Image 1: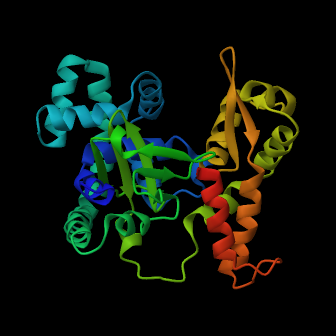
Image 2 (image 1 turned 90 degrees about the horizontal axis):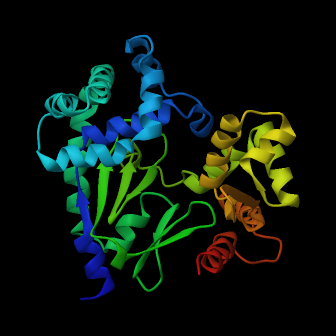
Length: 318
């Protein structure tokens, strides 16, 4: 079996309200990371009972809600409310709060269920027509396949290589709430890709690469620029960054998540219980090359911008 055959066999599709529930909560609770709130967020917040969001934040600190959602869906396939009622029988507080949250977000999912399910059929049919590498790469330039086809390349932090041998499935989930064209989440041997079905049908070939937009979005904040300046000089933990800038550690952590997601910052090891972060200067160069290429401006050295970016990416991912 070739690596491409193996890749095709790993790809699965799923309409998953429970996984989308977990994603929506992640988005609502990380506003600094995802930028301007989408209209659905305010509608959901208006439906929430007082105190529920704070309790859900506490649950999310203690429980991997994505893992829980996958477990509930696969242990006994049930309608989402019934699955959450069953959870409430075992874990009353968590189950009751998630059921209350489901009541707040279910109108948003219900309004898009046709789009979500139709997208599954369309993507499954497309996978049969094109090679799996092209299929995956078309969602976003933040995900690709290694040149030899034996691993996924995820552009997060300094870049992650996920060997196909470490996976039992690659699950594509259309999302009503994803603020990105593509978001990824790893659970043991399952690689989950949440994708925005409206983007895959937009038909806009001149749209800017997602990594370019994400990079400049991460830079468009004075606090994040200060964090970058600090770690450009030395590797630091979030706690020390917070002390030097007079910020809460939680605020620094939220900003760091976006900087890592954009590839501008990477983890540089650990000292005791503290994770150290460092600047990824190559990513700054990549953003400049990407911007020139998208704007139709050749790089200064006469090399095509897209090619220069591609070559540097391969060097980083190697």
